[in-house]
Amino acid sequence: MTLTGNWTYPTAIRFGAGRLRELPDACAEAGMARPLLVTDRGLADLPITAAALDVLEAAGLGRALFAEVDPNPNERNLAAGVAAFRAGGHDGVIAFGGGSGLDLGKMVAFMSGQTRPVWDFEDIGDWWTRADAEAIAPIVAVPTTAGTGSEVGRASVITNAETHEKKIIFHPRVLPRVVLCDPELTVGMPRAITAGTGLDAFAHCVEAFSSPHYHPMSQGIALEGMRLVKEYLPRAYADGTDLEARAHMMSAAMMGSTAFQKGLGAIHAMSHPIGAVFNAHHGTTNAICMPAVLDFNAEAIRERFDSAAAYLGIEGGFDGFRAFVQELNDRMGIPRTLSELGATPERIDELAEMAIRDPSCGGNPVPLTVEDLRTLFQRCL
Image (cartoon, rainbow, N blue to C red; front, side, top):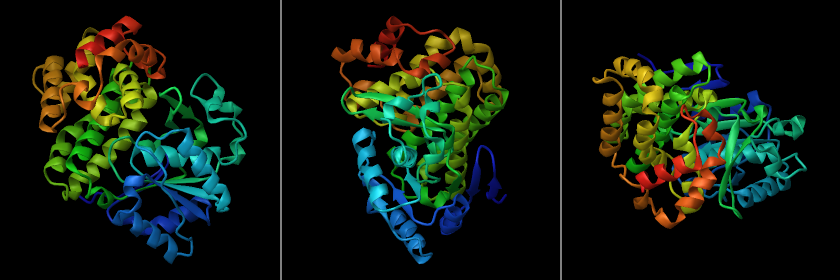
């Protein structure tokens, strides 16, 4: 089977090995002639970034690069990126990389024409309507990992450098105009990043599937996304050059992000403050929190995961699925506790207070309290 296609759900997606060479066409489709490529510091000097810039330069689109992006991007990175965008006279952004590069790139395009501070557009109620939609620059997204699915998302996660809180900034036009998914770009990912990002995609699918909100399209996407991760993440982890596995994981990442329009839950509510306070890898944090949250939600989700387990070929219904999750974490070298990522118990009260304010709480199948979250953090630490 040839793993290639041209899709328009949830946006225009060019998928397939070697399609980085179509980057100039994607820019033209998005209406940009002077793009700024935004990525993180870790990717700035890697061959895949040079290859993207070479393709752009050969097509007469320049090779403008902004890479002052932290692993958990913040408003200071954003201000520097917007300044670079304006100084260079750019007319669009190529958001390139993993979650940090994609999220920050999308926000540079979003904020390039706004006059209000970014926090005025947090994903609360209709705050997004405060933005000048016509001033949002076009975005082309090029993922280089298979995890966050930010390439097909309408929001970005930005850390407030002063309060150490992660904030979700939303606007419908933050959805990239064109996504270019080339699994060859993920071949060089280290095993730890392959595992962490892949389990991030899995967490998105698990939480979307668990959410009590009504969205049958997302429910189906979440289920098949779980299957792809189950089948292909171990292969990608074992052999990073397995292009079939890499391609299916890129699909799973987009599916997870598309599915969680239905909602997220306690896994992400906990993971966001851990990442903001201790600068921990988001996907790895999700993976550590997942078993405890499954236990907490068990009675509310048992029946639906009994059915999911059957589809996934896992014996034992929900209990079998819960055991599989821990086994998968262990196979991927994921730590058993948040302490191994640097989290410390004296911050539990603070973390619980931050988590209860996270909008992800609204999608948890069991209503959450501060005390619930405090207990969950204690279990994960």
